[in-house]
Amino acid sequence: MTKRPKVLVARRVPAAVIDKLSRHFELDTVPGDTVLTPDELRARLQGKAGAYITGTVRITGELLDACPELRVISTMSVGYNHIDLPACTARRVLVTNTPDVLTETTADFGFALLMATARRMSEGERLLRDGRWESWSWDFLAGADVHGTTLGILGMGRIGQAIARRGHSGFGMKVIYHNRSRLPAETESQLAARYLSKDELLREADHLILVLPYSAASHHCIGAAEIALMKPTATLVNIARGGIVDEDALAAALREHRIAAAGLDVFEGEPRVNPALLPLPNVVLTPHIASATMPTRLAMADLAADNLVAALTGATPPTPLNPEILPLQ
Ligand code: DGY
Image (cartoon, rainbow, N blue to C red; front, side):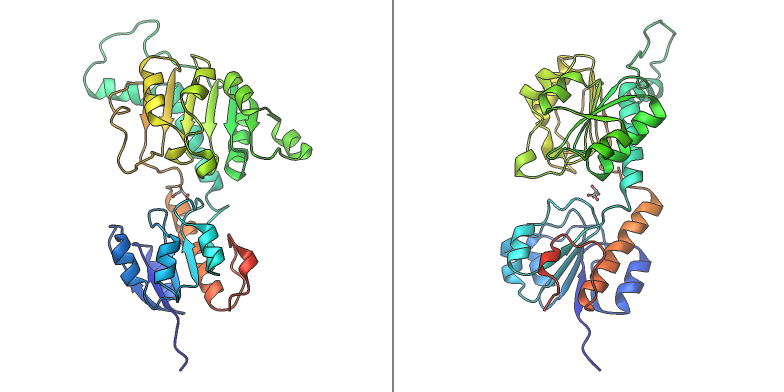
């Protein structure tokens, strides 16, 4: 019998994934939700041809050098800033991610966070639960409108476009966006979205949502100078990656009411949250759950398994990030 490739499943995953992978591979599984330390990860990857990981497992060139048999890394996430992709490509290690299957769910959440932020929902719930709801007044928890306002989208990929559709078709919003590359005219007209420079976007948006990928280029691309361009009534929502926003600058702006409110699902040092954000009433904080519905998480888990199976059995994986290295030797 030919030897089956060895695969590390570095996090707890749905049982169906283990079933699928175990039909093809000899598995080494990490059953709990604790993230392996870099030393543990290196040790567990010895002799493995594949790794099934999530966004909390960091893959560096140094790690790859210590695990020369590794040929495929499948991450159960659309974001891949935890993986040094050029280092993988240079070593002919294939990387796959899970786009598309989470687009609509993540866009739903982005919109929910925008609504919660604009309409001060967390603030209201905290007040109610604390027994501080005493009377009605004309401006009691009065927030900002969402319908009919201007929605600014920074990062107009699949998720950005799904948010644009919600804003335009569902809420009659005027949609403006900025992206590294401008969309084709036909897509812009389907989305009723207008391309602006980043500064114009910051100035014009009533609600600004960040959906761009995190990289060295986007690190802290929303800081004090950018926030200073925004309207004092504007809200800022981040469902991309924490490192895109300078959280100290944002906390200061929220404290001084230089913008109205923010909704954050992602944090620079997560799961640690910048303590400057915690006491602020005008920020809605959620623990990186934009893609967290059961059907979507199962679809992501399944796609990550399909990628690994295809890549290590000589087929073309559905969603490779560095397809230029295919076919694998
Ligand atoms: C992703 O898929 O990148 C989401 O942020 C969940 O990790």
